[in-house]
Length: 239
Image (cartoon, rainbow, N blue to C red; front, side, top):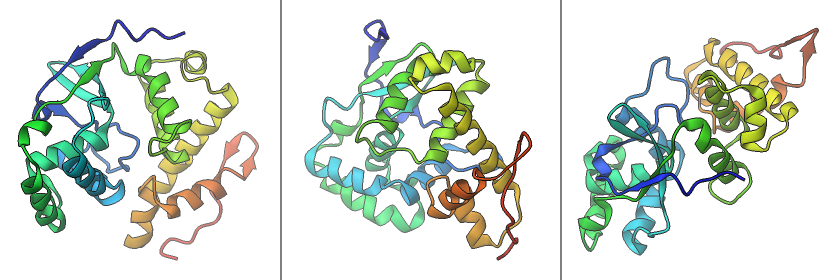
């Protein structure tokens, strides 16, 4: 059984907590995403406006605790990016993509008090890998806005890049080694697809890990095997 009671609890200012550039919801951009780029991606693709509207109407529930890790002097949220983005936009609507600014300004004006979104409860995990079991469970087993398979795959790949072994991931996440290997193959195919040349509309669909185009590509790419190499099906750039 994992021990979470030793994690420290804090109540930092919302503006001081950073969104996670390694969030699996964020597509490959060719560089580390800025905070504003992360906000834009979440607003466009992950119903952040709808979540902010619920918070403005119903309040921010005290049970909604974010999970963070320390990165130098900063706290980075590893679970709860949509909620944190919603709070940030209620406080500073101008951070939203231009076409959403007026909508977030209206939500902000409807708040009974800005104090209810200025601070947020967080648990500080010792590391990303130690937070992994809880995060994977929330986004693969329960009703909290599930990750698409490509988003799960990116998360597994990110954890391995921190030095966690495959065997440790089996223990931490409860996934079988076979499922984890499948996730790594999916991530490899996604990275290959992201580097291919497509027309702008198709490229946007492929690079967004939550998009149906990207999903269809994933489903077709892992069904073909050549020796020990997994290859993409024939795709005509621009077609």
